[in-house]
Image 1 (spheres, rainbow, N blue to C red):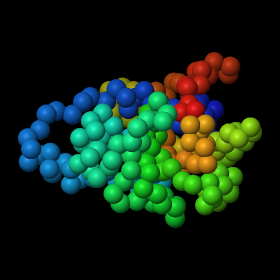
Image 2: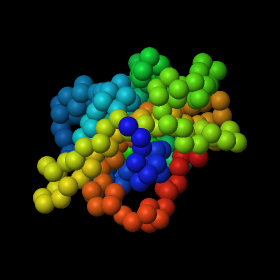
Image 3: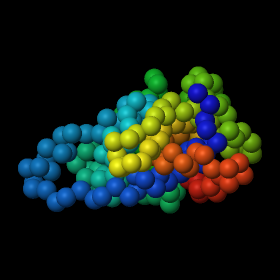
Image 4: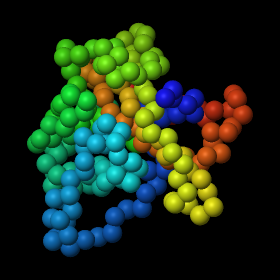
Length: 206
């Protein structure tokens, strides 16, 4: 499925809909332990097999380092201001590739892989992605795996839920490539905007 033009700028960009999710209510220590045991399904999230509700489970660990530690994630110094990075006790897997290095940027969750193991071009070809940028050392490719109307979230409003699989590189991580999924939720009328009036691209994780 080709990526719709209005979605191109969302790969490695902030998902406003998810950023506006309400904060979790305070819990008791026993409830905290139960929540810690319910770890986010990273493999499914990375392969675009989840949805915006599942992605919302990542908001707590990103906002609260103690929640990340309870999940077995070690928060890392931010080498890129747009990405939260973690080392995992147990590596996550996506499409046969695994890493203990996880990055989250807005509505995107990604594995950080070594280009010495596979090039971004080869990985994009393997996953049948549409190449969007491949020049001057920058690479970005994606494919929309999910696009569906949601009428159950807002009264009298149709929202489009989307999941885009992506492979990219960022200047802050030389020799690395990012593999993961971008989740978004947008009003249907946004897709009907006249040609030439697409929103300005959000700043990437570069």
